[in-house]
Image (tube, rainbow, N blue to C red; front, side, top):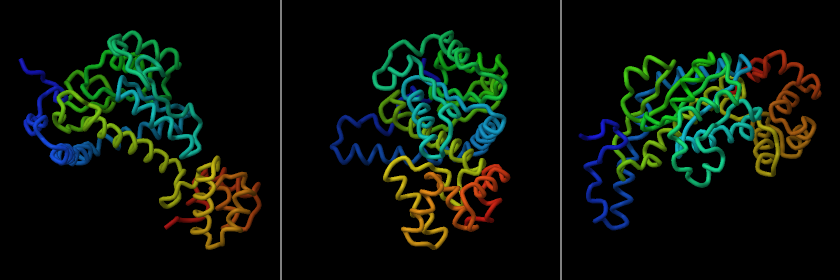
Length: 299
């Protein structure tokens, strides 16, 4: 009997891929990849609900916790790791849990995904509670570790969601708060979900966290103004933001940024209102960190 999971079915378009030359392989993979964004777009309402759950968790002092195995787990850890340098978040705010632990990030831990009790134990270790949003990621929809984690998170009172790339079961739709199911179709190489399913996963996670950060006021216009300067690249980016938004030259931007201890948002308020660092911080605190409430829109 053919596997009902879409991620495990054979793709008719690629059954002769082993007979193609290099350019033919590239063209075939690219043609299949074009389906991904459309499939993700079809799940826009579910993704928006997940974004809202993440925002609510953050506002309540809770966390967004991704749980996955293999590629799914790695993508969750990656998205979590990118939040602190991009949006100056506490590292605990967005977390990624991967079956097999951090060793599984660089070397496959075969069999680690097969134990639902281990997923449940991971939720206990993180002290998951009602303020948190736990999103399970399993593109096949069947990974025991992920189901164990999501089930336990629900028992602990957290909001829960599930991201998969096959048609969700009625049971899954019933047991979690949101299901995101971009149906990207069978992979070019049967079962190789690091390809289209992995790309869809990355798009969804990017949208959830980016959207939540925008909603929390960490973006002004479309600029990441809540970044903290920690390297030359970010120093340059911060100075360019200040140059563009304030209409000042680079030396003034550098002085403002240094006076704000490398925090672009604070420097922007200082320069725009002509206030010192303490007053800029006070006004941002009163506005819950939302620059638009202090300065108006950033268009």
